[in-house]
Length: 424
Image (cartoon, rainbow, N blue to C red; front, side):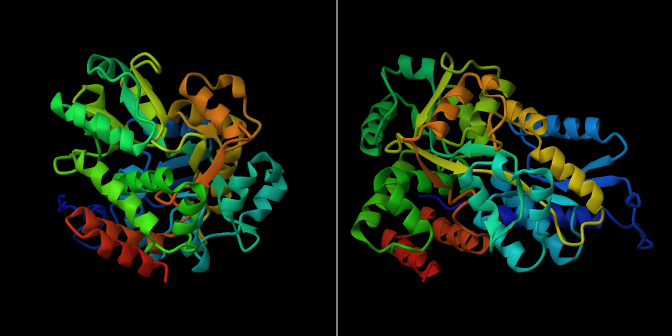
């Protein structure tokens, strides 16, 4: 296993310092324009291909509905928001909040709620009649202490295995693996053909892979219990599952990866790698950015061992306490919660809308299969640990540290002890 030198938080702090150094001239005066009363500054991490297109569509809808409000896009690039959260934390600590910021719905919101850094949005839900417009699982995720703290805009699925249909056919692989042991058998055949079995990216994608290997090996109940502190990480079954993760990682390009999740998909597109485990935002990159056709050029199945399970996450926006332009921020949140706003975002970003009353006839290709799984009463829904549904930001950082040490060459037993200690 391989240790990577550039941690995303380090990169984010460098971005922050560069930004701060450019904000003042030699006399100490700001070079930035004064804040207008008719503007809204929104903080997000949707800057990369496959994400930016949907965000741009949502912004365009907001501008169309609010032509007198200047929209300030304060996005920071980086998959899963790792870079953005570090920069945002610095701004919040300096009492310089944006007017609204992106978050993963769920426990990721907890730290800012406990610190009193965000506004209770229950009044917006009541005023606009939103309570019955979102699925129960999503409302539960954004409710803390009986109060609602964010506006959800998407439903994504984490547990997907993406592959190049034609490349796999050419390699003699008839169908994708249904279990991780089956994946390892296929991996041996792929290696013999000089094809990387699994493409991967930076630290957050490795955690994303870990959660879905654990889900596939342990099942939904044990998976959820692990990430919420209701089960021990020291059991023999968990050790066996982490061993499977280690073997899967060894069949990946973790020693040589470069770039973010898009780069992992590029290797699948080029036929250099067979598979990658990624959320369904991959569909936007493959179909929109790369012009490929779902089902013909590329396809996706539930990650091994997770058929019948929907590992969900939801992107949402919050309202900071002390937002400089609260009225405009409320207009932004109302656009985010609207059916047209959510459809503008999701049909480009290739997510399901968070609202239950959007036009289901607009879901085509991959989205049609995602909707069928999401609405199927037999589907077991669990929350993503990597993407904030089950794990708060403090524990998430501690998990990142433990996982980095393990991927960098640490022993399984030490990793399990570290994980169990996080939840002690």
